[in-house]
Image 1 (cartoon, one colour):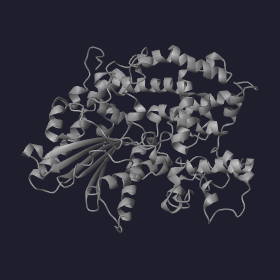
Image 2 (spheres, one colour):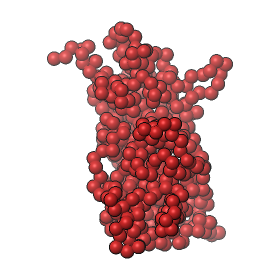
Image 3 (cartoon, one colour):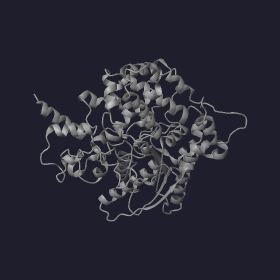
Image 4 (spheres, one colour):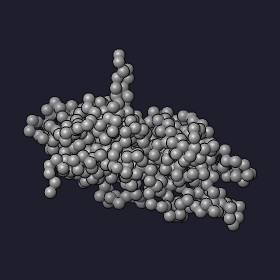
Length: 546
């Protein structure tokens, strides 16, 4: 039987192992966090320093605790000669990195499959928690046999990496936290007291910026794609990058490019330089902001989210709200579905940003999480997917751009010319990818999601956390196949979503002739006159369901 001290040490060791993005080749074999490199950016408590005389805060890291960082304990250069177990325990507790007993430490993991658009990428690929560079099990049928088919072009649309909460979310959390700190939960309410003591380290200045984990997400994704497509992501190749103007997307692009350089250098290249172009294009990556019809009929229309509003008042959600109200010992009028969702998202941010089980997770069980996931999915469905035609139609400009690039590569190949843009990578948002995937016909349920069919939709296809988690990526891979039976059969395509082959909606297969793919989306490609699609009719709204 373990002593109390031995048990505590084992818990600390397990905690260290849950920070996979701190690992490096030199330490991974020993299970130890690194001393330099990525860890220097990711150490908690070392951001948000103010320069002498003021200066702005670096919002990429939590506030400094005043104690040495967790990773420093393992670095030979910085590790104290003797660190008592009690001091180490206090260090972790002060940094908010150790949350109670084993059950509490695993609570976020239990809830994490239901975090929706706030999901970490590792939910889809758990092996990345052990090794963020792993390609996982071999994909049957991918890539196409290199003896007969050669990749010509990789065209990708990506969501940014893990981000901090938005200013609006932080302000809502501050309101809820202030309610508890003000004694709203009562002096004998243990859960409320514990949450009142929780350090509110989120600052409004963070406002949706890319978190340190987000930089790691994109750098590691670049390295994995370099391994998957060595002939395309190679020195001397021309790469074209496009980004939304939001900082989290621009920074994701930077992190991706840096990760790619590191991958190419580790392959034997020295002083690797990439031939690249970069542009910010909101009309392409934030098409929804530029579509007048969407803005008026959906974004700014108070009634467009009526199914979402109705579900907030449903028996399933009221059960979660009432339970949370009781747990926090609050008056019924102080809490609503929106604030409960904020608490749930705070749990998700703890896991995605810091890889910890936040004390806010203790408010919820699995059934609560399922209802809250459905609330988030309803919003995504009605605002970004199949709820209204204009949601997906507005993304046709992006689909056109993808096929324009594919067409150009096919044309150059037929004329035996070098492919001018073998790699095109575009950085956007969940709101960029979700409409595009809907336009392409993916994840469409036979029965639309609504406020009344929560129970019957338990096995639905449309689960946003499985579709557009942080760092989500949609890849179009164009091949030239020498041994084709006819010229039209020379060019084939595969599509991957989040590094998994995505079957074509019209065949169920994972490879298609390019001509068939283009013909399938012929209507969207030929009838996408963005100004016309997004024009506003003079006589009222005209939102329609798909």
